[in-house]
Image 1: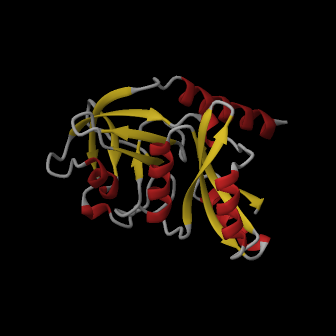
Image 2: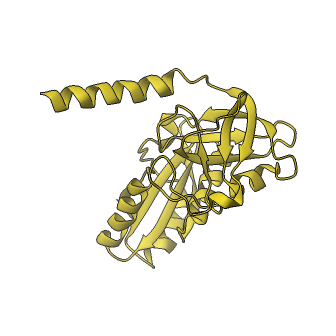
Image 3: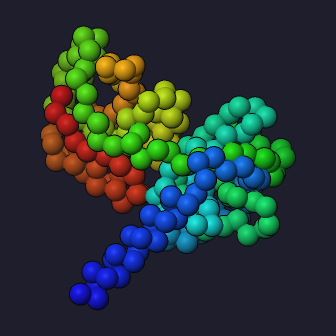
Length: 219
């Protein structure tokens, strides 16, 4: 009974942390110094300057946020895996790879806007493929029978940024599929193909260990 109560409290805290976060928050961003390379973060992961990660004071670990440099209009999607930054006025501390994507290396500290990736954009959306997509999947099927969906987005830019994040985290064979919906298009990020379902399931397990999303589907 006590365990259930504690789990409920934790879930409520996580929910309130996300829902209380403004849709778009503006402030300054900094990035990790090289001396932090391979040090443990607050989540227990080792910091890697080549991964697209970030520190935030309150957002739950694993939250994906889109960070935009309003001056250059460049954006990057990062995964929260640490706590910080401590200096007043700063809202996020970025990995070196993320800072490079935003082109803020020279400034050291720069103004940014931060927004959480909408949960519905990471939902397990299974959509009927159009003719071109069916053809593309047919080509994939010749190399394997299964694939993993890591996200589905209404905006292509978000799919592209998640693709970069996964590539930098060592995921090969990532692709963005354009799927036709009744109202516009959806951009699905796919990993694979895999010759066996167990191989695809191993990828899903690895994604979950990194607080990322994925499910297996048959091609």
